[in-house]
Length: 321
Image 1 (tube, rainbow, N blue to C red):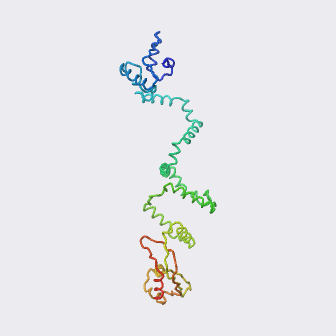
Image 2 (image 1 turned 135 degrees about the horizontal axis):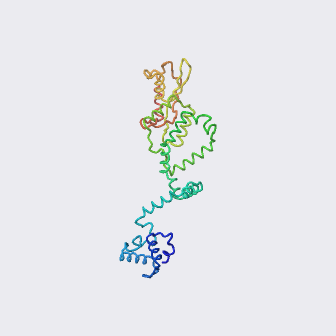
Image 3 (image 1 turned 180 degrees about the horizontal axis):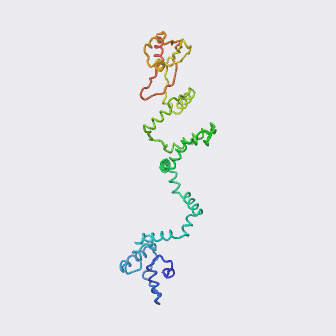
């Protein structure tokens, strides 16, 4: 009750402080009168509201209609003007500006933000990561850096920080296991991503003329068989061993389809290829031997799926040949 008179210098209500100062200067005294007494705070706040309404807020020194429990800052009608005055006074003060620009202040602010739970939740979210990656890629600094790297070749050869750094099999396995566990609960960044026609054209041009060795093809086939066995199916073929009479080079081909594809790549057509299957010579090539029931795992395509051939059909084809 005596708080207002004691804290006149730093009072939150300037209207009330001016009124008390004017009474004291004239030689008057503040008269305190008890109107209502209770132990419940809510009842006292309700009584305050009713008395202010009876007398009128214009005739009193109250800033609001009461019932806030002493918080007259948030519910103040002149809150925006008060905020502007405080901000202007802080901007013009040299102490505040020097304190805000100091390294200690920046370290305190960064530590407080990093340790906050809201910051950790937002940073760990996938949406935040995706937005940050898009913002960084679209920034001018990042684009200029990429152009500089391409022109000057800053990350090529010995200039690359990972030059000569080879990973062991254990490191590769550990990284693959970590990624597999991560993507069980997280959505991959490239889901639903579609390449434009320009990027597809660039990729096709960059890969033209490049051929994978047979060892690499076999490794890829084995890894795909382990991870996605449903993409392959076992097919029984007749293995044709064909020899060139001029170069004496022998070629092993699976099934008649494989033989046709081989000659189509050589000459662009398969006219009169029936001579070869009739045990005659065709374009300096001749069948030396036919091995039946050869099993081969073939990748299944959606457009043309190769049906499984039974052993009986292979035997019939062997009799025809």
